[in-house]
Image (tube, rainbow, N blue to C red; front, side, top):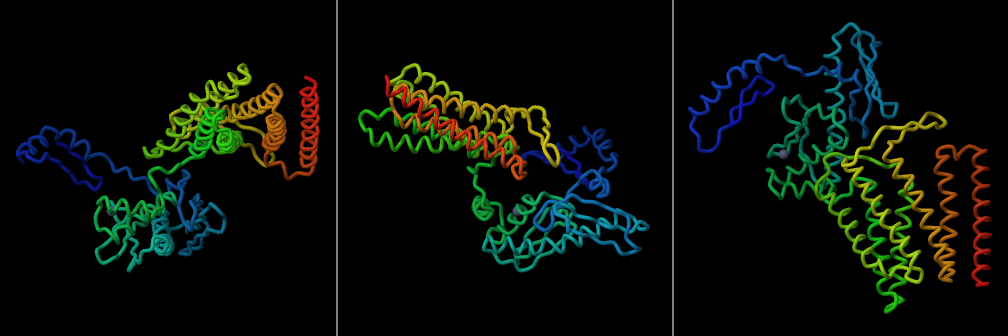
Length: 430
Ligand SMILES: [Zn+2]
């Protein structure tokens, strides 16, 4: 049994299927004190004025905009402007009630903006809309009549643009299915272009590179004696995404984007990728680089740590691991802030890049394989240059740093080539 008070002062009592009405009435009586208190509570709808003065936003013209109000309109000449990106400027009449002006402005903006948006999205979804109404519904975002009329609430303007679109797509899907059947949801998912297994974050994509990369590397090592050609191909297919994954992980601080309410399906792909990687490592434990057991053990440890870093990014993005405090850094034209967790991951990825690069060079030297030495030396050089540019970030456009960047580039290339030749010469002697 469940009793609740709706905001319009309506009382709703829900009874189990086979219960008597009298039981329900007894239940209401037993809860009369609570009901009285609930009904006497003042209604706490915040005004639009309060909402906007606290930074409330409006979604209009393809973007979510911060609202700025100024009381500088001539009598009865209120107006609005969306000229500045990300902002909506409302100019209000100081002598008339503010709230009424805001209400009528927003309603007329909603009438201007929502119908064309519905037509655009309808075209995208391949639907045809007969009629669109924008109203002041009390408890619905939107509805769709059997005659194909879509009614929308002007308050959709107060939602984030993607949520606004979602409501519109929902109503459009009702043009095909006038219910909420599985067929309706399947159709909605298709037209909205979102899948349950969608990767909502950067980390999700990253894990899809790192995980299978490690898995391919591991499995290639298992067959390199029997099928050396296939093993070499697998190795190349493993190293490419793995290298790319670690490289992009080095920019994680810019892309960490915790999301809440992730669909369960979104976990599926990263978890499968990580499990694959664990399997690959298990296969690789004896076979990978077995010419040099000491180096082999190091490589396996590095890959395990890398896997943990990748798993951490997913946990951070999906809100399982907290981001920690925000740290500010100096940057020309305004400071930048990064969360502690995203910085730690970024730094760990940089370290991992260099460790693996040095490992490659060492393995090449030890096992007499020039190819590994080349890859290792190049990776160290690429690491120095990209990290340098990453650190100076937005200042790459300034002349001095352009010259400095060029020097780092040329200097690194020269040093790496010298290192490579020296190592090769030493390899020749032994
Ligand atoms: Zn519906």
